[in-house]
Length: 401
Picture (cartoon, rainbow, N blue to C red):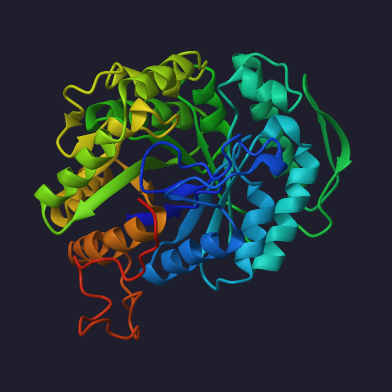
């Protein structure tokens, strides 16, 4: 089982800090109120294309694109970026409750043809009722997962190439189909830590995603989902969502983490924790429990830092250390059954290079990556240094703090 490496597209904005990274200071609700923020990079297609091209060059298999109020639409953004990349796949996040499953199946089929088979799907059921109501969805937490279960049954049914009927509590479909099914069928990624989520994963998905919890907690999750899948006669693969801060030395990496922490004033942390504490997501509550809103003891497991989760919802932990140490932790998770690593870092352009030039060669040397030519083969040297040499400074550096 090889490691699959994926990166992240910050379609809500990017920057050098954990706060104020959104390009639109009012959340983009009123576009006439967009104001520049120091050190924040707008998620325009030119900047996102830089990240996508860097990820492709560095050997990442795919990039995750988020979904929600505060980011650009994932389908449209990734379709645009598919036209300026050649091999990179796109892990498109979307909410099943706000789109017809037959339409979603058709969109996926079209995306596969236009992108030449480079679509992956990340199904986000949604853990925040306030966010869901913005899109007209008024179901409660467990009902949303029940609907996702039906949604995925319909999607897979209409991909069969023949008229498909379905009658459920949430969807009734008569003769649904995609005239030209996607080829290949997109892999379906899905995450959820609640009792309502587990059976949905076991019955329907290809890859179960967890946020970056300590190894023992991840092991328990893997065993939970694997057991449920076996009861369904299925096999599910596993992935993990993490940030990374990898440098030539552990000292440099932790200095970067501490700088990010220094940017967070107590009021910002308190406000973020209050907002995140209202989430219905069990996974989000597990993230919050890792640090309890405190700056003390943020290294919750060797090289696993919970500082990101002080202000960021969702993925709240980062692997911090030297390139070899970060590779050690990835190898540790891999031994638990984790195959897909969906990674990110601030800013996303530079951190892609730190990881791609530093950690990826470590993983390759350990036999954890599929054999093949170096992703940077043929790239000219910079300042007398081969572009593929591990551990060096980023090749592309943008402005900002």
